[in-house]
Length: 109
Length: 122
Picture 1 (cartoon, rainbow over the protein chains, first blue to last red):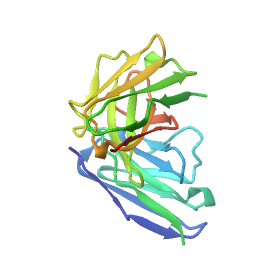
Picture 2: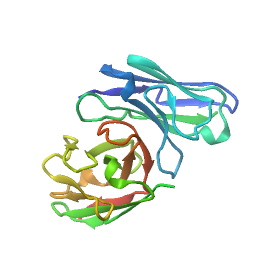
Picture 3: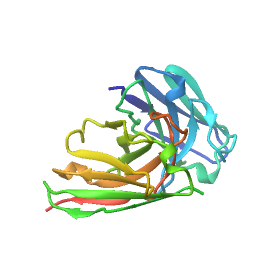
Picture 4: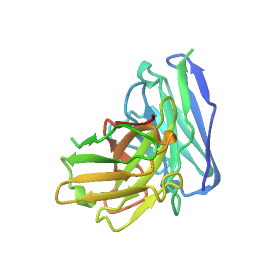
């Protein structure tokens, strides 16, 4: 099973600041099979990024994804009030299970 | 827009069974793999199971394998999750989710239902 470790667990930032979230895999993951989701409090998860770097439909360009192999990054260039949420990465390796990271909580400083 | 509406959750005793349903609309249901993802209270997301568009391929998390069966009725645009031998640790909101890309079984999901709460307790 591929384990995804997200860091930091909590990120305290102010609106307008840049957020950099990390997702590290216990073994190599194809970039095609790495996604990021956002979950606002009390809401359903929303797909942000798929294929490590492709933005999903309707996602603002302040969100970007990068990385390969075992290290992936989600960057939010300038935090808007609605961006304070929990972010999860998920991998779809060659075979299941298709695991999620434990999440990074981006909170208002 | 795509709609996914789950039902069937509730309170069940340990060892009991539940059948979750997810009614899908506004997309060609049979073209897309579907998944169940759960979230225990105050916890993160956990992938549970995925089924291909035709229903011929299924995958399960180790935590539910042998106790859970995913299925679908493409004539009724409905996804199911039959859950048996339920345990306290199965307590969670269960979401159904649609695959982003048609045909592909593994990959990101782009639409989620609102979820149905399963509580396993005496």
